[in-house]
Amino acid sequence: MKNDEPRRRCELIGWDRFYTLARRLARRIRESGYRPEAIVAIGRGGYVPGRVLSDFLGQPRFAGFGIEHYRDIRREPQARVGYPLAMDVRGQRVLLVDDVTDSGDTFAVALEHLRQRGAPAQVRTAVLYHKRSCPYVPDYCAGVLGAWRWITYPWAVAEDVGSLVRAMRIDPRDVDGVAARLSSDYGMRLRREVLLDVLATLERSVAPAAAPRSQREPV
Image 1 (cartoon, one colour):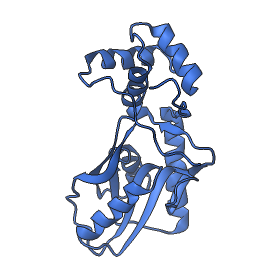
Image 2: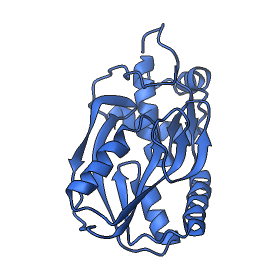
Image 3: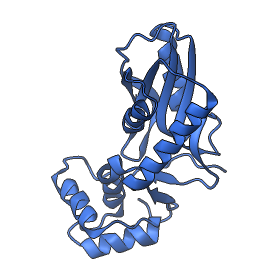
């Protein structure tokens, strides 16, 4: 990352907090009276939330499809379907699940993909966090983020933090130095054993040490 590039505001979500958010999201869906006949996750971020919602909503018909929009925390120029949906959802009530709303591009592509695979009777969307800066507003969310920040969920710690460390151009063997930079630059604090796992993953990575692309932030 260039020295004059603004630091991203980051927040790390732990497993306990994720589970609390997922339970809250499931409760809001139940209380709305919506009874999906199929739960469809947008991959990769929606896979874990979708599976937990499948459990709490008592709906075992669960599938997903992959949209390629981010590589670690670098945003690709355009969202696209990389792995299509195999489940037939024609004429059914569908709950479409992702982890967070950011630009709205992912849901635009996902909803169009569902229509192309056979129009469902109804589609409602759900995320753990909705960023108020996003023009797309989902039907359900567990929380709303007023101030923009990058959210790192527990299933993407090595990927997201590894990208930040590569951009720092710091020796990944300097564990204390990396921890200090993550805290000062991004407000991100990891347990030492988790950081060691991330750095071990980073050492095995063959990806080039390219600086992350800037994400869209509210003006």
